[in-house]
Image (cartoon, rainbow, N blue to C red; front, side):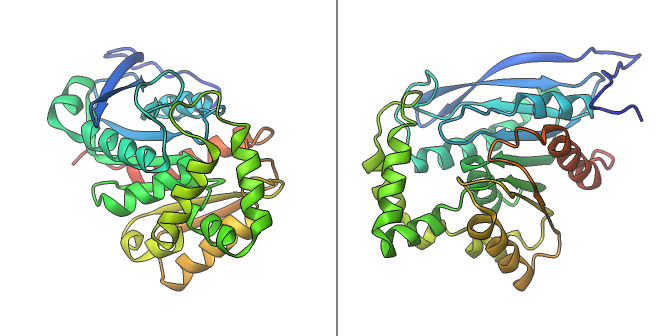
Length: 281
């Protein structure tokens, strides 16, 4: 098979690869996305890529690599971000992710775009990693899930409860990230996270993920989601339950995986190939 990182595949019987703007409704708000469709008649396995907070790194390179590897790859914006209507909140991110994933599996959407609703994975970066794991835990129809430099809001909430300095650091950091977002503020975000508390702990999802493949990628030079805080404790929790389909790696890179984008694509595609590339059901 050609290397999907260097070769654009062509399906001799058509149709050709396409890049399609798509919209979704979530709580009365229209969300805009881009669906990267591979060549061929399908039905195609699907990967939904969830970006983080506020979404500077949107993983379009990963979407293109996944498309070249034979996957339909969706990237979209949450409510209240990057020009979308509505207001931004952590809860709205979770609601939007759930609505989009469910919509992709509906017969109308899947049929129009030649998608296989039984072979759908969710992969997210940072806050998107948190949302990917939460979405899969709540939706048994998600076949596989991956988190890259995932931000564990439950862990951060616990730190805020016990360490005023940690709470002050989140307030300061998040206040500087609000330009692409609408309808929120740093204090509102910290308060929402603290109110959710342990209910947003990713470790507590282990029982609901135990039957699915789970990929966790940590980042070794990352002050945003340091591996010792957000990655390794989660790996240990999923091992202890256990989650038999767990795969985990730590890459020596920063939060955006700036110098490991090829390595990231290879890890994610290898994971998807092993768990989604079977014959359509």
